[in-house]
Length: 294
Image (cartoon, rainbow, N blue to C red):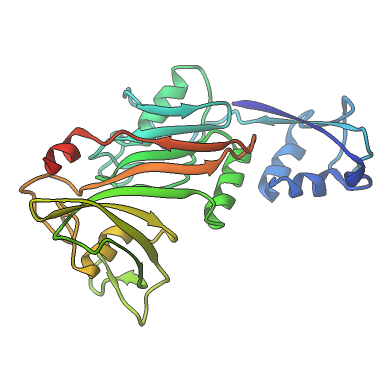
């Protein structure tokens, strides 16, 4: 993978070192070290320079990112990817159900990461797997991948600053309130490695906004937006509220309408990490979710 960036220095940046200028643009310490080790990774007015050099108004600064290695321990597996958006910097996929996002014990070749590895391998490109917003195995929908270290640094910062707005759809049991905010800390349930619960003594801050969109047959179609990103946050919060998600093997194992947790990452709103363009990307609602609502 190769990516080039060009910057024109203004009077406001006069006297700033190259490293300080790049830090102001979101380049991480690790990325600056990588540029230092890259032949002609930093060019000022067409000449290779050290990052400690100072910039002057009118200077032309060119950055050359090179990643020759691919992610280790992620074997390539032929797989059809549902691509919602792609450019030089990011790849946004519509993740299917029953698919982990990265390999683990017992799931070595059947994950989204394996399919992404094959996708880039088939194009003759190296690729390091960098997943920005994580989804559980059975959760479907929009997922962002960074295609290089710079976009990864910027997107990770945006996640920490809550600048990537994630909207989910869920089917829950019962007629839930019209809308509200669930502000209840979440922690790991004692005696369990996987299960989480609301715990006001030991839990970490967790906030979920919800809005009921429709009701049918004693069920509610709910739109949810996350302020935080705790493990199983939506599933735990809706159970705590008294309206658990359908098909949730941990918190409501009722498979009468759907065989997996009825949660879909429907929409992502965020600024493009490099261009700043406002993006609103939607993942179509999967067929099993639609049938469960019928």
